[in-house]
Amino acid sequence: MTRTGGFQDDDFWTEFHDVLFSEERIGQAGALVGASPLLSFPAGSRVLDLCCGPGVFTVPLALRGHEVTGVDLSPSMLERARGRADRAGARVAHVRADARTFEAPGRFDVAVNLFTSFGYFEDPADNARVLRTMHDCLAPGGTLLLDLAGKELLARRVTPPKVVRRGEDLVVQTDTVLDDWARLRSDWVLVRGDRVVRARLEWFVYSAVELRGLVEEAGFGEVEVFGGFDGRPYDEHAERLVVRAVRGA
Image (cartoon, rainbow, N blue to C red; front, top):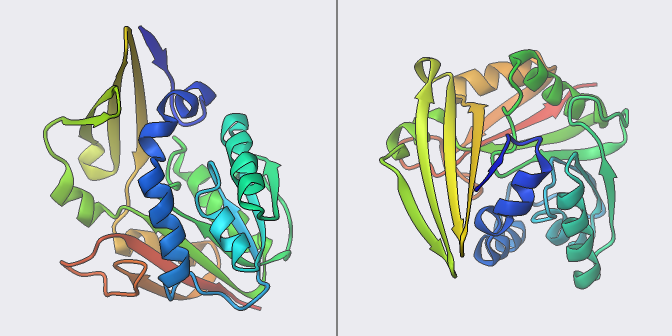
């Protein structure tokens, strides 16, 4: 039996890659980039994908003609992202860096953080630093797009353990609410042949009001909240919590 650590443990991303980033999910991301009004940026935009993972969004954004930079701390994720870009013939710059300390002042027109890639640092101040990183990397008037599973949505979906089969693999996920809904913990068990791999992730979860406040504290204005990439309202029919905001002058 193997046990992996949290999101900063590269073994986690290696072991659970196929669970988290199925080909179906990768295809859905590409379709979103082609259809979503929130992911429609001016031609040739300089786009920062912070916490880009294996390039799920960097590649389709680059194929639409944007100048894309993917930043991630995981060597294995960046290796997969480079391979995906090469196979697709997409030009993407990849940088290994910590989301809290990456620096490229005023270099980008758009900064995205997608697929619930926010809130994983133990210290809330570190999560706030990630938002500040994206603010400082944007040119004045640049756009932030932040996508995650909102607290209101998670409250409907936290259920008894979920069992999913991916090919020959069996995955069991158990979610636990922590600190009066400040955080969530997911315990994962992956059964792959004769191997059993266990992992645990803990992260902060945010309501729309809480996330709006954090984004405003990071210096953004014109903050808008949506319930999905199609621009629907954040209401009882919401599928995601998507925040769009603008860096001021």
